[in-house]
Image 1 (tube, rainbow, N blue to C red):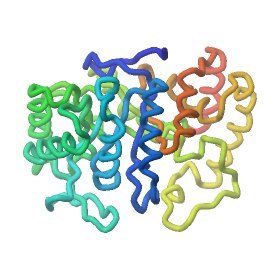
Image 2: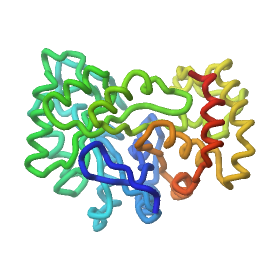
Image 3: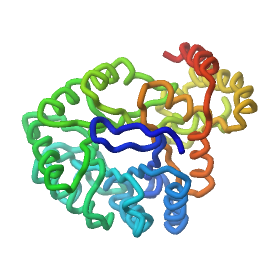
Image 4: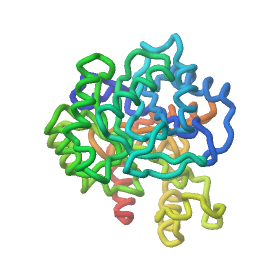
Length: 327
């Protein structure tokens, strides 16, 4: 059994690796999915010891939540389930977010909006409680949606037993401080990888100060750290990776050269690049939780191996030194 890490001050303890289900939502971003295969993948993740399953209403406009709900039926007590709130397309608000598959999406961090979102998620997921509820994106207008009101909604849901812990995603240091002023914020979810480390300076100090955990998404830097891409790999127009600084030629070459040098660790630890990078990422920040996406059983089977890669201290030290060039 992998060592357990607590989620903030919630008392909830889990292995460091969780499963993200954005891709399972499908839609134009990810393409069509085989839902039966997605359900199998989630169930296999749970069987293999990945107990934190993370979803959101926006992933496929409820589709990911529907699939997760089917997958966890009869197994609810064996998992830690997180979903999100505050992105809205049932009604319009003054804070526009973006268009998703032809549907206009807005941000709504009002008490009423958050409670309605949670009630909808409980129905879709087929459960009567959520372990961790995140606010998915923060408002651009604090006058319209003060964090005090947002936190009042979340603390109310916690007191009612409908959620066990409170999370926030895509936040600033000031957001974290204000959430903690009005209640217990247990975890933030942010983009973090060995190639994208801004949160170490921007958010980690305040999280350590206030006892807030961090859950990292995109630990494999949109696939770049899997070793499957080369300098010649190109992506279609509109692909998000075209705008990712790590994929730009100069930086991509540095990353690929580092991975080439790390081949020796693949042999030593009998693992893939994905396993190695996830295991290293989990050592970068004390108590870090890491999300790995998957939509096929073989992907989750590979991800879970990272829980069993026990890196030697000297190798961690050397790899951290190798990636200093990316800071």
